[in-house]
Amino acid sequence: MTTSAPRAAGADLAAEFGTYAPRGLTALAICAIRALPWRWPARRLAALARLAISRGRQRFIDVEVHGNRMRLAVLGNACDRNALFLPRFQDPVLRAALARALPSGGTFVDVGANVGLFTVNAAALVGPTGRVLAIEPQPDIQARLTANIAANDFRHVALVACAVGDGEGTLTLHLGNNAGEASLNPGMAGASGKTINVAVRPLADIVRDAALDRIDALKIDVEGLEDRILAPFFATVDQSLWPRMIAIEYSPHAWATDIVAHMRDLGYRVADDSTMNWILVRD
Image 1: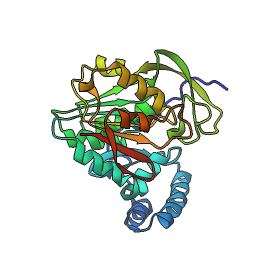
Image 2: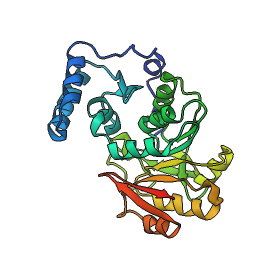
Image 3: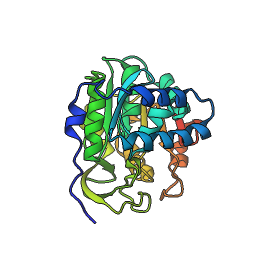
Image 4: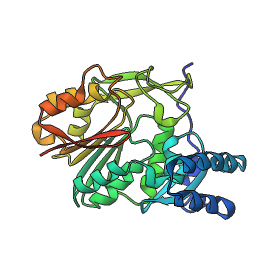
C-alpha cells in the first residue's frame, strides 16, 4: 500500500516549547524511570508508562535530554521512548565519541537524523560557529526534527530533506511501525506495509552542495544501506572531506560489501563499539 506523506501534528509542533511539559504523575513517572540504574526494568516500566500517558490523548512531551530541549512523541518511535525515559542508556559510547571528535566550530553530518537526538547533541558541542547537516527522508519526522532544532535556537543546523543512496532520483521508502525502522531496503523496514516516495541523493552531492570543507564526525543509520552510501562517497570526494570519525550502525547481515573492512583499507580503525554502532576514526 502506497500512501501520501503522513501529516505532522502541525499545531502541536508549532506550540511554544514547554506547552507539553510533563506534570503530575507523568512527571513523577519520567523522573523515577530515568533514575533507575538497571536498563531492563527501566524499559519495562517505560513501556507501561507510555501506554498510560497515551490513554490521556497526550501526543507529545517537552523535556530536556542531555541538556537539550526535545519535544518527544509518546508513541510510534523507539528513539523518542529512549530519549524520554532512558536517556542514560541511549548509546553512551556514541555520545562520548562525539564529545571527543567534535571541537567548537566543528562540522557534523547526521545521515538518518530521525527526530534529532544526536543532531542537537552535536549542535551543542560545535556551538554557533560550527555546522551540522541533518539528513532525514520522512516528512513527518522532518517536521519534528525541525521543531527540536528550533526549540534550541540552533541556527547553525541545516535540514536536508531527502534519503541518501548511491544515485539520484526518487525511490520507495518502506515505513515501519517504529519510525526509526524506515528503509529503502524493504527487507530491513518494519512491518507496517506503508510506503512513500522520497527523493534520493548521493552523500557526496549533499556534502558538496553544503560547501563543507571538512567533516569532523559523521553518524550513519540507514537500516542496512550504509555500505551503498559510504563506498561511493569515499570513491568520489577528496580525502580532505573524509570524516575524522564515523559512527556506523551494525547491519553487516544487510550489507552487500563489508564496509568496515573497506574503511580499514582506507586507513580507518575501529576505536570503539557499542550494542548499536561501530566507531571508526582516521588518525
